[in-house]
Length: 383
Image (cartoon, rainbow, N blue to C red; front, side):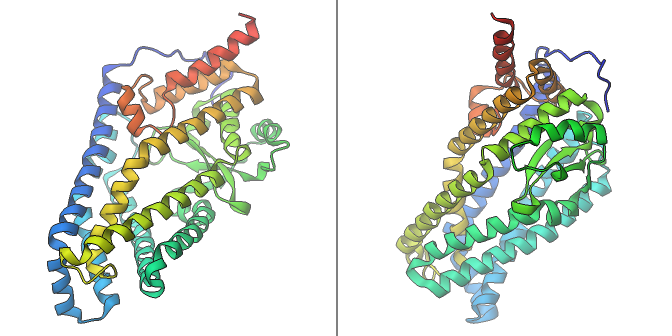
């Protein structure tokens, strides 16, 4: 852990390297998103019915096999489109900017594990969705929303104890002195100190991070080992208090409720569009497995339309937690130092273009977050 005597970092003008790094990352996200959406649209509106005829020729009227063929073909083709850009962004760019400790073999092994986990979850989701679609008929979108809620709650609970350990080592935080500091910040919040864990990121990245994950008895704060190694105890208290703020303000349950509403509207929209145009496009109605790409195109386009609003809500939640951290630690200097360190270590742009922040940022830019500390410091000093 860093020494208390270490001088706090200063926020400097954004370097050309940071601007270039962020530009490359945002460009890959944008291109990947547009490529995926375009491919879903091409399959859904042009090639899907012909592919459906091939599935029928191979499997007859065995709907489950036709659905499996449609899902596997879609997954493989999307992966072929996006994997090169993912490798460029997640491996080449990270190494180019000295942010990665990951070996090439490590990158591919993590990718293989993501295929296994994501493939099983994806197939399970598609199978459950079409089961409800075939079973409940015209009201499938209501049943699908209820199913989505159950899946979301289950995954949220399993994430920190089952899914995350597949990709990262997770251990209980053992630093008694630090735990004593953090315990004071959990008093009166119903979050216990036993729920603080160390997330071992350093085998993969130099970046520092922290998160609140889980539901119920799996709720825990995860502190990256990269953060614990480079931040002072006071700075760690700020980061920890921020994560506690998510628990206090019940942000996870609130976001789950909002996502359920979004899912309800999205599934209803799919029902309306497919009911109107599926037959005219050459599908055998809304329940045709070959229409899966069209289904996902509508859901994806709807989600992208709402993403600026959802990002704005997320930024509001983050500002609440930033203020909570300041109020609980009473240490604007440590708050300021912590976020300046995060910006430097993670090569974050403190002054992104407003449009970039609007479309891609689910956290406020660092400059905005520091303004809270300046305001708090001014109150303390009586200015």
